[in-house]
Image (cartoon, rainbow, N blue to C red; front, side, top):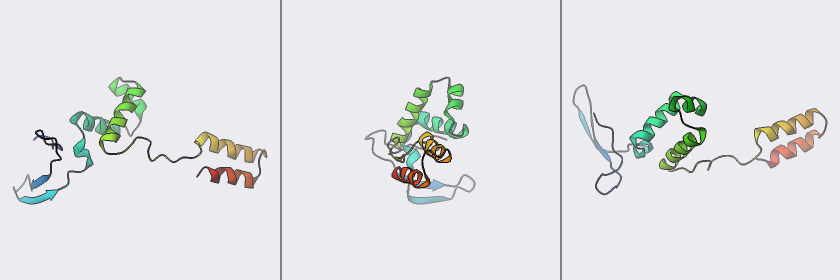
Length: 126
């Protein structure tokens, strides 16, 4: 069996799945079916995604398995994110880092700031 193509090899337009066939009884269903966003990925990108999932998204494990540097793995991941139609980091929440949040809570605990000041600082970051 061949992998599903997402792009026409002639004009590079989007291909549509039009027939589904049962492997057991050969029943066929015809129509226009969405292949999903992952059909836009190359075989190498799909292999990377499978490895990423198998390693539970832990880039350090991927570094060891692929013998690649952290920046190289991040770059490949960003290419896949863009191929899926997103911008890397585009949905990251603006606000406090975990380190800044901990500092505010530590300052509150140590009496350097009061409750109201801590809440103000935390809410400003939302």
